[in-house]
Length: 409
Image (cartoon, rainbow, N blue to C red; front, side, top):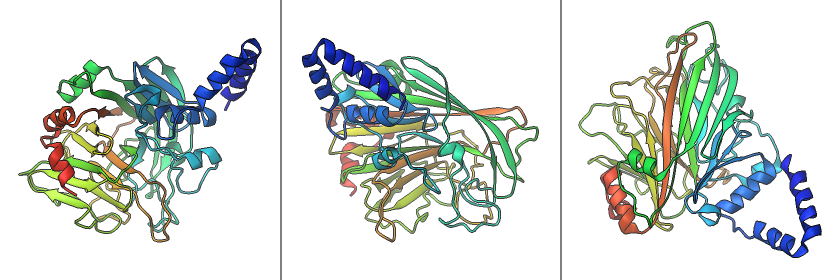
């Protein structure tokens, strides 16, 4: 908001010296179509104080106003497709809503668990329902301090106190660093070569949680986890792909009844090691993958835009204690999911928040001693190009072809 008067003054002074150039500049500001990165950059500058990271045509927008989240990105500069879903109406309104303020963003920092006796979204004694569900302000409405930034990185910090359903109070400090990756770094992260004709943007977030209290965090009274969620633009031709480990034991391969069981025409479990979920933003459903089955990659393919999105997360071998976010008093509060994906859709009254789809990953449950910290990192990549080029990358990363992904639904 503080930049608007400066921009107005600049335009007026520029107009006095050269009216024709001023009109041309103004025309260029308004020339971006909705759905482009340039449109979203301009919109966010008008309604917040974003930080843009650049490396050639690879761009991302991060926001201290919105908890250091990555709002969106582009692999083709200002005129390129904007990959993150943004809630224009909510941001433009300036309102602060009850329960949650879903401003969007293709990677946001959250904390778990959401439900259960150790929930940080429900107060002690409240029913586990939407009426009593409340997102903690530190991951919903509070601004984060921008402590450092450069051309390709931004660092944020926030201190907070949170009380869980069992009345355990957590004192903590959040540190979050967002780094825009070079093409060489992207190739190294993915283990693939990328053709020059393929447009690519990739970034990594390093998320640190510090116990600033005097007591250790213990399983008996509840633990926290780092939870990273990305909101992306849907289309009828988006398919979400979650590879999973075969030949291992777990209570389930995929939990698919968070909001009612997902019908077979929208969710396919291929026993060879793949879960496919429609990402069209037309049917509300969520899936979860247990840590025993989790692999470090998940993603989606948008056949309409020839867009391959890849999320790379940390999966620690042999670590199985993950917080459980089910909305109930739980028998097993540390048998939660390591990976989740959500497809938005209308609720019972026909209203809909999005449309968007989400890919989510979580750290293990964090049993931190006083003064101890833990770090959890995740990387996100978007690649646009010919299907032949993208297919090579898809098969290398996921071990599945684009043709098979497109043929599932």
